[in-house]
Image (cartoon, rainbow, N blue to C red):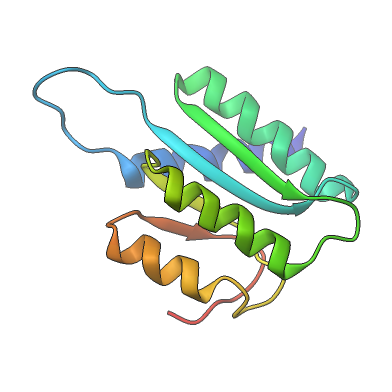
Length: 124
């Protein structure tokens, strides 16, 4: 329960960071959460926490992860696919390595998409 509470708090703070005033039509916030893989109980709990918090807050969340024994390259491909698809208001990432997502994160920054990093220190 404590893990879920912590993850809920992270998601609430994430949503607050991405919140923007709207004047016309109300648009649902859409976040992408990229986690390492679902074989580890920690990351499985993280996914459940994201989905629980998103449902309670009325936001859309897309959770992506690599298959068992996934690689940084697979993770990068998921993130690049999201950027090509568009429509994300923010990203939450848990990279395999500190620099493995740099190219996609730089692109997200250029597109004005806020990024929250969890679990691995990445260069600014």
